[in-house]
Image (cartoon, rainbow, N blue to C red; front, side, top):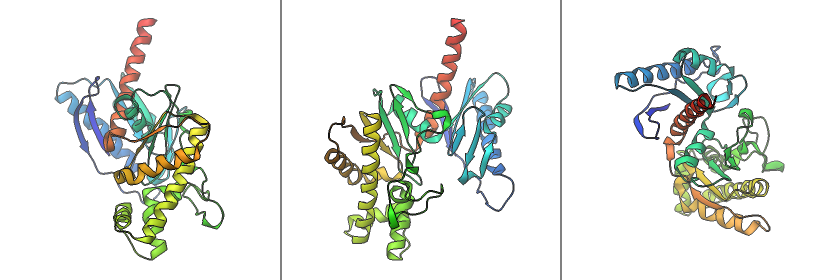
Length: 306
């Protein structure tokens, strides 16, 4: 878990990383250990803020999974959360008088990139981190799209068909995530060669060395990503797409063919810039804090207006 204390102007006053408890699928605690660790972190950060002479005005938390914005519940397979009342638990932990904002981790990262990073100055754009999974933060007409907590699951759109389509963790076949995520690169290379590799990083190293199997796996990932970006561009017309996550470490090996593929495929559509996200692993944490501060500002302006 990445966490910190952030001032109203976005300055990070304190940052730290804490381990996320390991989830065990055959246990019946419903991911309680992870939730307890989250609550403990929030409380202890509040105590540190007070000890340092700061007043906590709001708490922002971003998590993976599907967030039911109306009820404040989260369903996240990797955390063993199914309709878990995360927002209510957070509110009880921090006590009355403090706003609590709960959002998706990728939307949090996209919000930070919009406010302070690669998407700053845009009104129609996309943040697309390519990591263990794939999800998107969509900026449309100046606003981050939440869809009541369900929007942005581009990784679970089907772009692979026929016998080549693999079963995704979501239950569908042929999802973008099964071919173009960092986890998929390593897994697909291993299936193809019978060789276990140290994640996508090693696949990219093999690619640079001219490994033919790495090249095939990489080209298949790029083809699916170009399909996804063409679809998104046609539907939503972003002016800029910021690629993040672990795969962006490939630099122009990733970005250049995405730009070329998109340029070749588009006809009448507005062609977006494709750039690297700039905030890295801090994006989600910073986005959570900025969302929380914006909620404070909104509440105060509402009070003044009333």
